[in-house]
Structures are given as C-alpha cells and as structure tokens.
Length: 415
Ligand SMILES: Nc1ncnc2c1ncn2[C@@H]1O[C@H](COP(=O)(O)OS(=O)(=O)O)[C@@H](OP(=O)(O)O)[C@H]1O
Image 1 (cartoon, rainbow, N blue to C red):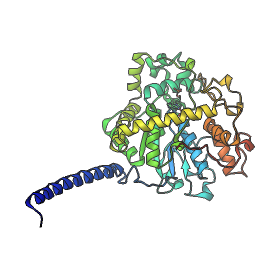
Image 2 (cartoon, helix red, strand yellow; image 1 turned 90 degrees about the vertical axis):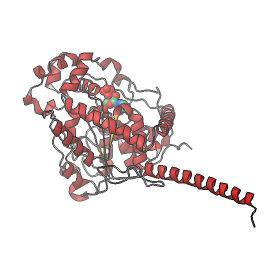
Image 3 (cartoon, rainbow, N blue to C red; image 1 turned 180 degrees about the vertical axis):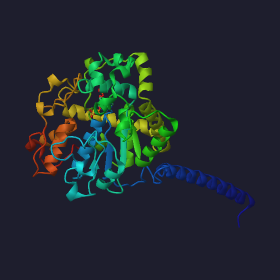
C-alpha cells in the first residue's frame, strides 16, 4: 500500500505529466497546422507534409522584366535533372505565341504529346483553358511579380527601340511626365511593355479602367488559377518558399542572377516619376501590393520568418560556393567582356545585359552544372528543343550540342 505522502507525490507527478503531455500535443498540432495550411482557393496543403515527393508537373507564368529568366533557368535545370518533358515553343519561335493569348498548339508536338507535358515556363500570355489542355490536372501553377516602379524603368531601357512611346521620349522621366503624349492607342501590340505589363501577361486588359470591383474580381481569379505568387524583390525568400512547396532540394533553387543590366544603363527615377507610375500602372500597382502581402502572410503561416532567415543564409552560402566553383570573375560581366559568345545573353534596347565567364579549369562534371547555370534563356530553350525534338530543324540561338551532352551529373550536394 502507498503511504499518503507517496500518493500526493503520485498525484503531483500525474499533473506534471498531464501538463507536459498537453504541451507536447499543442506543439504537435502547431507544427501539423503549419504543414497543413489550407489555401482558400485551392483547399489543399500548400506545403506538403514530410516526407514528401518532388512535384514534377509545374507551370511558371513568365512575366516580363521580373527576374523570370532566372526562374526559367531553374525550371530548365530541374527538367533536365528528372528528364521531364518541357512545353517548348513550336518551330523557330522562342516564345509561346506572346503577345497573343496562349493556345495549346503554340507548343511543339502538342498534337502527339497531348496533356503530358511536365514543365511550362517560356513567355506566354496566360489563358487558363488552353494551358490546361497541355498541362496535367495536378500541375502546380506559380508566377512572379516585381515592383512596378523598377519594372517600368527596366522595361523602358530594354524595349527602348521597340515601344514607340519609349522611342519618342528622351528618357524614362520624360515619358512619365506625360505618358499619354507618347502612348498612342493604335500601337496596341508594342504598348503592352509601356503600361501594366504584368496585368497583360496574366491575360487581362492592360488599358482597362481602374475600377475597384473589376480589380478585386481579377485578383480573385488569379488566386484561383495560381497556387503561389513570388516577389522579385525577395528573390531568395521566394526560392526557399518555392523549394518547400515543390518539395525540391536546395541545389534545385540555387541560381546566378540572369538578364541583369550594367549600372550605367540604369536610369534614376525622380520621386515624381515614381508616384506617376503608381497611377499610370495602377492595375499592376494593386496587383503587386496584394500579392506582396499574401507572400509574407504565406511565409508566416508556413515556414515562419526565423526558419526562412536561416534557409536564406544557407542558400546564399551555397550560391557563393558555386560562384567560386564556376566563375572566373566571381560576378556578372558586361557584354563585351563575355569571352564565349555562345553564352552571350540576348541584347535589347539601351540595356547592356550582363553575362558570365566560366573558369577554364572545370572538370566535365562541374562544367556541365556551371554551363547550365549561366545559360541564357534563348540558348537554353534552343538547346532543350534540340534534345526533345531531335528531328526538327534547330531553333536560332542554338549552342553547339556536343559540349552539353555529357552524362547527367550534379555537383556534390552540401551535407
Ligand atoms: N535573382 C534576381 N533577383 C532580383 N532581380 C533579378 C534576379 N534575376 C534577375 N533579376 C532582374 O530581373 C530583370 C530581368 O527580368 P526578366 O528575366 O524577367 O526579363 S525578360 O522579360 O525575360 O527579358 C533584370 O532587371 P533590371 O536589371 O532592372 O533590368 C534583372 O536584373
């Protein structure tokens, strides 16, 4: 028989154990809830529970001047790693029909491959019903937005010779001082780069009246069509979030910044110009504000800010490691300093688009990985096209294939 002292100790132990048990359970549910965040529009977990399987059916809406070429490079490398089928532009085209609204037959071999593509990420104007003809039902849809202020300045320099409104004005500030003076409704096709370009890329009218009800309806539609919207200003955070939701490895989202400009081809926006862009591109401005907010809310409700910070540090360390391994200059260089002209990015307008020089002493394995990390959009598209459709005529911007055809390997992964 237990003495009274012992029984009171026993009750105390029971209470303490019960308390600890409850604490443990509440922690467990907390973690579970984080892993099972239900997205309003999708009714499914955004971040899969562990252990998870890498998602291989992915559609990336490549918006213009938003760091989207860097994302495309990540997607292409992933496609090669898993031998996935990419929905590439048909024939000699380098875009999926842009600026026309996307149609399934813009994809090479759609008639024979049907709804069996894994990856889609070349420029297109989003048209959900046609994209769904190409991509499997369980496809993950995501895109990226950039602050319209810096985006417009970037577009101005890149499309300086293409967009009449840009060509006619002296500089970006002059254009913004009086956009309607330069922006003529008849230049519909070219004008898309000069106003609400992201809105247009998502499939909507970039000249539509800014009306609260209409804007809310479009934002809701985008939420229904896309699982995730990333933010270019927080590119590293975006990559970590992407890695989690797609259940990919860290090395899958390590990147070198592509399609950036030399500083001397960046114009400074005046304070007035910045304010004017918010009005002139008010549809894009609201799009950006809305998804910038939901981006941070998603991070807080899933990974958490502390863990995000740690993972971003790891990403930057690994990126630095790969830059030391791959690059002779440790940074992007101006177009005239790119030694291997096959790796020269497409140059446009008044922008000097930077590229990379690879180290000369790379072994085959490192060369394979490094070449792909610096491969510009057009060259990589042409290269994958030749691999996937060997009997078709090569696209322009082709790279000499043999150097890229070694056996699939990757750099050793960090512990
Ligand atoms: N990782 C990362 N983080 C932040 N910003 C980045 C990144 N990668 C590319 N960029 C910037 O994105 C601009 C190019 O965008 P895109 O590749 O989408 O352009 S394009 O539409 O395909 O021509 C271009 O912007 P500007 O330099 O202002 O023109 C790039 O510098």
